[in-house]
Image 1 (cartoon, rainbow, N blue to C red):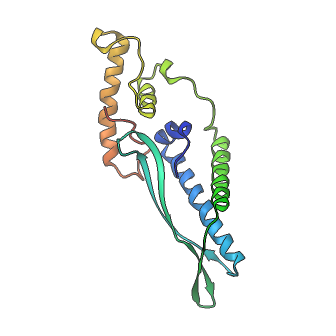
Image 2 (tube, one colour; image 1 turned 60 degrees about the horizontal axis):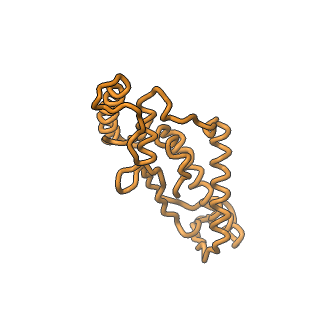
Image 3 (cartoon, one colour; image 1 turned 90 degrees about the vertical axis):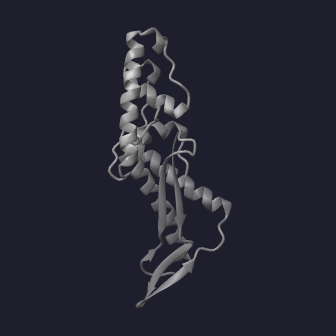
Length: 189
C-alpha cells in the first residue's frame, strides 16, 4: 500500500498516525475476506490474518512511507470444535478497487477527525530549519534558500547547524526499534 504523496511528511513525523493508518488498511482487507467467507457459508466467528512490514523509505533512502502486507488467501471459522478454512477464490478487479476505496475513505475520515488534513503552509518560508529539511527529504531536492552556506549568513549557519543535528538524530532513530520511534528518520545528509 503506497500512501498519497501529500501524506508523506505527516507520516514521517508522526509514527502514531502511520500506525493507525496501517491498522485501518489491514482491518479493511481482513473485513472483506471475512465478509466474503461468511457469504460462502462460513458461520460463527470468521477470522483471517496478515503480516505487515512498514517501510519509511524507498531503496534509495528517500522518504516513501508504504506498507508491504501478506494476507491469508481466505479466512478460518469454527465448525464445532474444528477450524475450517474458507479459501477466498479468485478476486475481481472491481473487488480490489472497492476494498481500497473503503480503506482510503476510512483513512481520510480518521485524518480529518484528528485535524491532520489541514492545508499546510509552505515550509520553505518557515523559520524552522528542520521543517525545511523535512520538505527536502520528501522532494528529494536540496532546500531552497537565498543565502549560500559558504557566505556565512545567519540563515545559512542556522541551516548547517540544523543539518548536523538532524543527521545525528536520524542516525540514532534509525537504530531504535520502529515501535518506540515517535518520528521517523527524515533524511541523513
